[in-house]
Amino acid sequence: MKKFKIIFQALFRRLLAHWKKPSAPVVSPSAAPLPSLPVFPFPVHSGDLVWCLMPLPQKELDQIPEGHQIRPYWIAAVKTDHVTGFYCSSKPIKKCPAASQFVISNAVTQIRDTHVDLRRIFRIPVANLIEPICSVPAVVQNQANKRLILQHRQNQNRPAFRFPVPLIPAPGDLLHSRGLILDCSEQSCTIVPRCNPNAESAVGGRINNRVFYFNARQTQTLPLFKLTANDIAGLADWELLSRIRLENRKARSRTSPPKHKQNAYVRKPAPFACGQILEEWGGQQYVFLCATRTHRYGYVYDDFMPDKLVCLKSDLIVTPERLPEDQLNDDLEALIEVQENPQMIQLLRQVQKQKDLPFPFLRSTPPRYRISAV
Image (cartoon, rainbow, N blue to C red):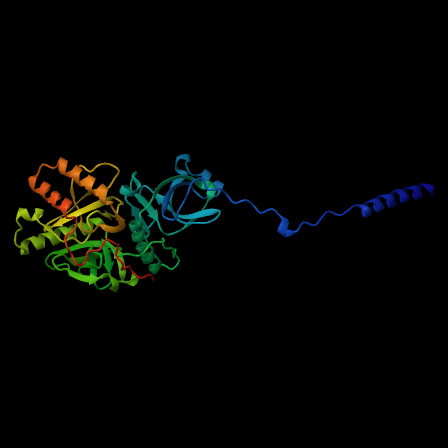
């Protein structure tokens, strides 16, 4: 009996000590430390092309050869703790239809052509960002937006994403019931209409897995403000566009009288200001100097003194930038020094004295007309 009493007293003391033990303090939710956000290894923006470790589970990643685990991704959006982007490859992507592939030219990447799979947007953790490749120009993002619009129109399960750039008409755009855009100016575009395969001067090509024929001899002008995103029916490649332009030039040369060579040195009012910075699709920029009856002259815009003139294409995009007056004068002097043609030297001297000829519609700002979004 005494033994049970001792055991009972020991248990009672242990329970009493447990009841008197102070309880742990209750931590307020507001006082709990916030999880730290990951730090980006370098600045990333929408439209950048970046080397990334493929955002796959470790088991799937281990099945990919080590040299192929790091791939380029075209960044769509930047979040606080991750980015989203499209998968890219240096070769055409297998099992991906042509309507869902977009090609970024090697003139932009300075490496090789980059094929973008637009069917899916991947979530990429910050830890998977390896190294930036380049920033893709807005004119290229503009064309990618059109491809995304066409893809989403055919399949509602495809991403409805758009890069944050204005939707602008460009050569190669196929328009519903109108034809193909051949060239664009600031306020209008030149369109070649569709025609039958047997029509004279018909040029055919495949767009969106269908064959279209266009009458390169006929052209019509359409104001840009009349175009909307719903008018876009497809995007032609440069090979088809080049063949149409070649046939169009042949047709015009057969119907128009021959021009004397002197017209190449006779100035006329230009649609751009002297010193205006123009940009092509690939991102290369040029400085506009003057226009003659046959050509538009300028030079490549870079960090070096210009050493030759170039004839500018008619489909260049106008940028908001304009070369400062003193830098423009220095570049003109450098171009005059390397010229051997007396007529070209005289033309450049005229530009030095009078930068711009009187022209009532001269504009040095980008086009104000944009394709309205869907």
